[in-house]
Image (cartoon, rainbow, N blue to C red; front, side):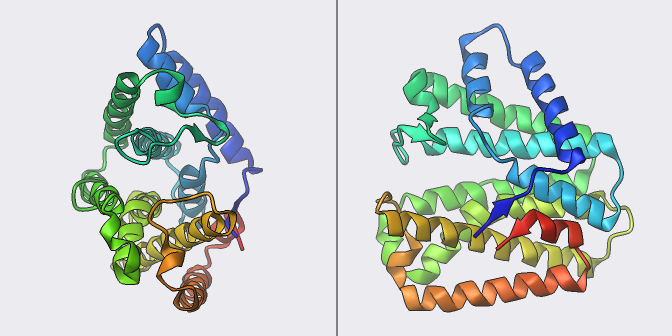
Length: 266
C-alpha cells in the first residue's frame, strides 16, 4: 500500500510557499476560481514529495529550482485530473470527495482551467532553466507519453490484454512519476548515466505499483468501470506486483535512497 509521509519540515515549507503563490497568481476571475478549486481539493503532493526526497538523497540543494519544479509537477498533475474527469473522458462527478471542476462550475470552464494549468506548468518549468530536463518533460508528458496513455485508456477494446493495459498504465501513470524522479537527477550537476538509467526504472516500477494498487482497490470495492488491470489476470498480477516491488527496493537500497524510501511505505 502506498502511503505518503508529509511530516518533514521541507514539505511544510514548500506547501506554505506554494499556497501563497497560487493565491497570488490565480485570482479575480471565474476561471481562476476554478483553477484554485482544483489545486486545493486535498491532493497529497505525492509527486513533489518523492522529487524533493530524492533531491535530498542525491545532494540537490538549489531551493529555487526545487520549488519551481515541484510547482510544475503539481500544476501538470492537476491539469490531467481536470481533463480526465470530463464527460468526454471518464465522466466523474467527484474527486477526493468533492465535486469535480466541471460539476462545480461547468464543462467549458473545466476545459479552460486544465488548459491554463498546462500552460502555467511549463512556465514554472522554464524557471528551472534546464534544457535537458525540459526536453525530457516534453517527451514523457506529450503525445508519446502521458497523453498517449490517456488515449489508450479510452480505447476500451484493450481491457482484456494484460500487456497492453500495463503499457497504458506505464504511459498514463508512470511517466509523470518518472518525471518527478528524473527531475532530481537532472538537477544534480554530476549525475551519471547509471544513476539516470536506474532512477528511470525506479519511476517506471513505482508508477506501475501505484496503478496496480489503485486498480485493486477499485476492483475490490466495485467502484470502477474503467480499464482495470485486475480483470486481465489476478494470478499474473500478483506475481508482477511482487517482482516490481522487489526491483524497486533493490534500486532504493543500492543507491542508499533512505529519505525516498521513508516517503514510500508498503
